[in-house]
Amino acid sequence: MKKTTTKIKVRYAETDQMGFVHHGNYALFFEMGRLDWITKIGVSYKNMESEGILLPVVFLEANYLKSAYYDDELTIETFLLEKPTVRIKFGYNIYNENKDLITKGITHLAFMNKQTGKPQRCPKYLFDKI
Image (cartoon, rainbow, N blue to C red; front, side, top):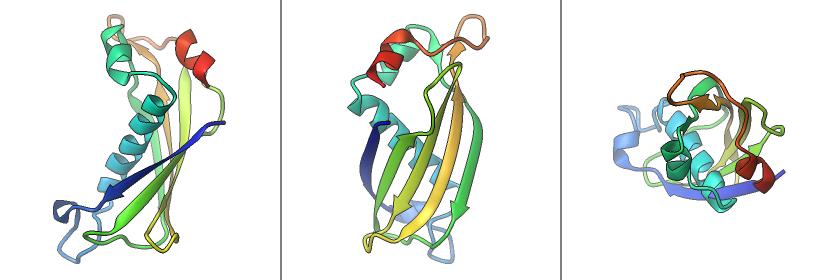
């Protein structure tokens, strides 16, 4: 399935007192990769929301292998784990400038109808792009 890469530069505000990227920021990095993945396959997340489809995260897992630091350039590799149904499952690998794998992660998001708050199937136009 489609895989994308997204490059980011670690900002000072994303580090903790020890100089490492704070663990909570990796969820944000996963989101940055996921939104870039959706854009690169030709779907607008903003348009999906305006059509009444929301994608809340219902599961997140991160495995921290090495630390990242202020001003590091990171590469976020984002890929689908399986074809979507009422959920879409992404995998992530984050690499540092030396191409060392520093973090692995998984997120599951549910397709949710904004008006009813109930799950719904993946929209056909998104499924067709995959």
